[in-house]
Image 1 (tube, helix red, strand yellow):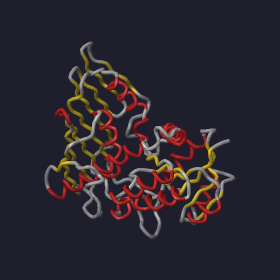
Image 2: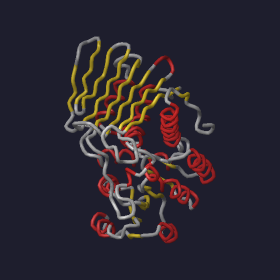
Image 3: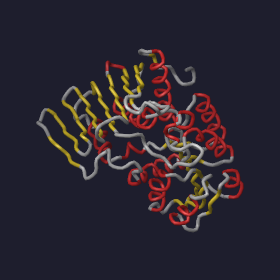
Image 4: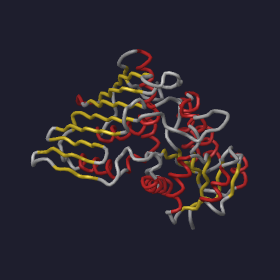
Amino acid sequence: MPIKGAIIGFGHIAANGHVPAYRANPNITIQAVCDNQEERRSINNKLLPGSRFYSSAQELFEREDIDFVDVSTPPAAHAPFILKALASGRHVLCEKPLVLSAKDLTAISKTMKNSAKTVVTVHNWRYSPILQKVSSLIKGGQIGQIIQITYEVIRTQPSVAVQDDACGNWRLDPDIAGGGILVDHGWHAFYLVNEWACSMPESVECTLEKRKFKDIKVEDTADVRLCYPKRLEARLFFTWAGEERSNRIEIEGSRGSIKVLDDRILIEEEGGPSEITFSQGLSAGSHHPDWYGAVIEEFLEEMNNPRISGRNFQEAASCFNILDHCRKSNKAGGTVKIEDWNRA
C-alpha cells in the first residue's frame, strides 16, 4: 500500500519542486493539499487530480487518513504545523529552515520523542549531482585532509515567492522568513560544509549587510567565517546584490583541491588536473524536482527505520544553531563561540 500524505502550503516550491517528485514515486500518494489562498485550488486540481483541497489545516487533520504531512508554508508557520502533525500521529517532511527559534526547536524535539514520529527537513542540495560528486571525492580521500572551504552564492535579486495581498513577497518579511539571503542559502551551505568538514564549527564570525536593496527589511548580503576543529576554516559568502547569477565552491585539501564553478568540477591532485562537466549548473532554477526525489527516499528511510529516525533532525538542529549564532555574531560585531542550541 502506498504511503498517504498531504501538502500544507502549495506555493512555487511545493507545486513545481515537490509534486513532480511525488508523482514519480509509486510508494507515495498525495491525497490532500491545504493552502489559505483559494486560487491555488485550480493549480492543485491540475497537478494532483483526485486529491482534495482544504483552506483549513484543522479540517485536513480531522478528515484525512494520512501517514505524513509535507509542510511547505513560509517558515514562521513551520513549527505550529509540525507540532500539530506530530501530536496527531503523523510524520513530517518540512521545507528549510525547519524553525526560526530555539524554543520551537526544543518543542519539536520533545514532541518527536513522545510521538515516536520523525521530522525530516528538505536538505535537497545534498542530492545535486554536482555536490554528490564533490562529497564522494572528499569521502574517498581524493584531496586528503580538508584544510579550507570557500562557498559562494551570487544572485542578482531577492528570491521570489507566491504573493498575496496580506504580505506580498514573504521572503522579504523578517517575521515570516526569519531573515534574508542568510536563511535563503545559508541553511543549505551549513549542512554541506559540516558534512565535508566531518565536524561541527566551534565559532562563527558573521556580517549582515544591505548592499543594494536598501529598502527591504532583511539583509541582501551575508559574509560568514566558520572555524572548525583542527584549524579548518570555512568562508561563506551569499548575496542578492550580484551582477550575475553564479555558484562557486573551493575545497583545499592536504593533497590537492576541488573547485566547483557552477556546472564544472575542477580537480587538482598529485596525478595532475582533471575536469568534470555537468549538464546543469548549481545556479540553474530554484525548484529542483530532480533533487527532491532523493529527499523523499531519505524521509521514507527514517519513517521505516527507528534506528536512524532523528538523524536528519539533528542535522537541521545544527543548521539552526549556526544560523542563530550568525545573528549573534553580527549583533556583537565579532566572533562568537557556538554553544549547543539547548543552552544557547
